[in-house]
Length: 473
Ligand SMILES: CC(C)[C@H](C(=O)O)[C@@H](O)C(=O)O
Ligand code: SF4
Image 1 (tube, rainbow, N blue to C red):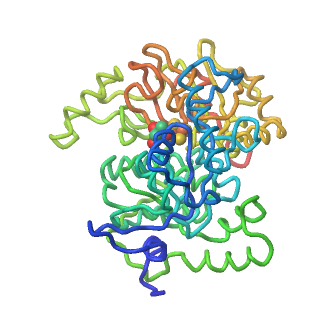
Image 2: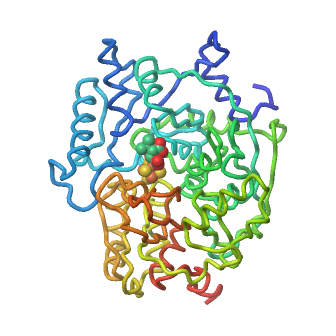
Image 3: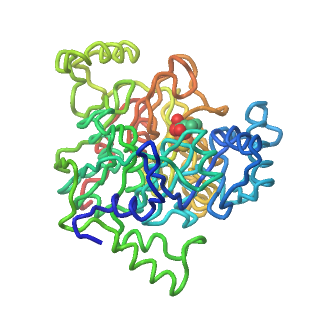
């Protein structure tokens, strides 16, 4: 393999089956993850054509979006949710696909359970009928969100027709300050490059900030690469990646693991790797970040004022004003002190054990502010069990947070967890689109789980650094 090839192109080339008449690449998909929302029609398409799932052993299913996080008794109160649940149960049974269902112990958000079970590995191509599939790129896999008809295609052929994106290296170097987390890094990147800036690109995140990150932090970053418009995002595999995977249920074991390790590490972009574009940011310039608008690029550092409309290019000004009007915020205003109604800790961006540990550390000995509804929703049953064992669940409930079952919950509100009316929600999720959290007029402020916890306790948007122990104390 040539030294100048970056990881993305190495993995792409290794999985290329051929070039289609359209000019697209037919790409072999190593791992296909499915969930209840985008799979029912895909299975229906297979039935219509009398097709089978080509590699049921490369296909794994979970339930996450529609799952209630309080009362999980069947049948679910929501008829549509019950139908989706029964459909995935039937489809997995009939097509021979492993399903992590509610009784399984491994159920959770699709992007939480893949890595947790050791299914997600470096050098793989991964597809899932879900935009945040980019999360799996944290392992140095190339992982794409796909639509329902493509889900049918992958089920029946284990391949996907795709245009090869260009690769942009996004560097962040230096030291992150206290109270600045992976979430702030990716919100900062999206703000700089724009929500459409990544169109046509795969993002390689590189630099010493990512090198020092844990796998869970890397997943937070890659999860949101698609919010910046990129087709996918990834981080080169290193010893951190290898050690995370070691011993997980679906990881290679023994000698096979050592062989895989060598191969995984060989895939990383080397010092001479070429990129179609490169940008880089200084870690020290990143503050705890919070969104003020209706897309994930509309954010500010907690000590900054909301930018003026005039500071945007003319073609964007109308949209910016519309966002301010919807949020009932003004240019020049500070986000600090803005009252919140709801605090949501969870989602495939920030619903893993390290997120809950951070939140619990701040919640310990504090109380959720009067009038604020605060919920903590683990990303998976495994995260939930671990949090209970570590005493985190108890810390949360003592502080006045609700402790829930695993699922997507209020990230998308395709389940009973919804905002009401004009409520403002401090949320550790990844999208702040109008109506995203279940009320058409509800308002979402994206931030790190630590910032959400701080807002829950103070009752308003807070600089989390005010609540951290001074260094050395
Ligand atoms: C329901 C699903 C198709 C959707 C996605 O693709 O991302 C959801 O997960 C989301 O986050 O909006
Ligand atoms: S947690 Fe949110 S972003 Fe992630 S898969 Fe579920 S709905 Fe989509």
